[in-house]
Amino acid sequence: MESVKYNNVGCSNVGGCGTRAREGRAQGVGAQETTAYLKQMEERMVQTVGEPGVLGQWVESLFPKEQVTYVWALYRVGALADGRTVFHYTNRMGFTIDGKVMAYGPDGHRVKERISEQRSVNSEQIIANEPKTKVSSDHCSLITDHSSPRKAGGGFVTWLHALERLERPLPLPLFGEHLLPTLPFAPVCLVESEKTALIAKLWRPDCTWLATGGKGNFTAERLQPLRGRQVFVWPDEDALTEWMGKAAELGPHLDIRFEFPQGYLR
Image 1 (cartoon, helix red, strand yellow):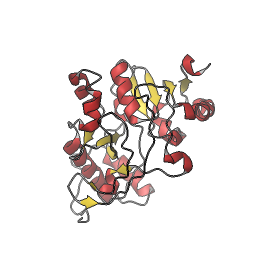
Image 2 (cartoon, rainbow, N blue to C red):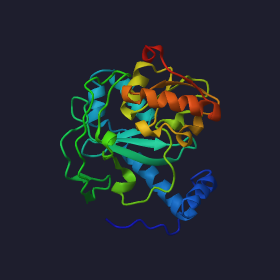
Image 3 (cartoon, rainbow, N blue to C red):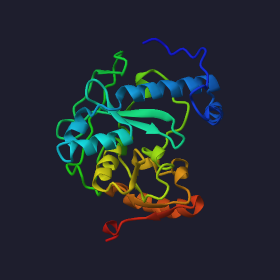
């Protein structure tokens, strides 16, 4: 794969790139490189959004197709040519920072067998060697018990920046964070997985459903955009104790009013 060239890249159509550039410099990346990275991620997002992928086709068997199409577009979810889902992470300023690439089977489960060969969105071949992942059989439940290699310190997630052989210069936002400025008064609900957020949005469209993207991402840095909001938290069962403890600690510090549904408090 050819290396990305950053020559003659400006900020003409990337609003507010000064703030993003300053954050990039703080991580050792120059303004020009940061702007070029953001433009490339935006291009990759445009290339993939609109494709339901295998996961989207499965969700269409549970909900009306037009609703699924709307939610996929709202959350900027797409798919690669091989059907793998791309969950684009766009921050509240509208910049697409990265895309998490995950493979699903026709039944909506994560693909469990090892994937030895994958292709990026520009069809350059790379080796990913994704390890097996165990998935809960309860697709739609907001109270699930997901066991994965991450719990043992392993686990592998494919990201667009890795497929494109780039370095991510900016921190990841919450999945769905870009919806916060446009829906300032909608109830905010926070879950762990992107898939759960999407299905929950179809189930309860009146809420703004966000995802941390992982059990360990319930952090002050990731939760900063929720300042001053009331947030209903729906963790997976194995994250309940940890997230409740962190919510008690971070809530006053971040001015966030965390609420856990009564179904957890039994």
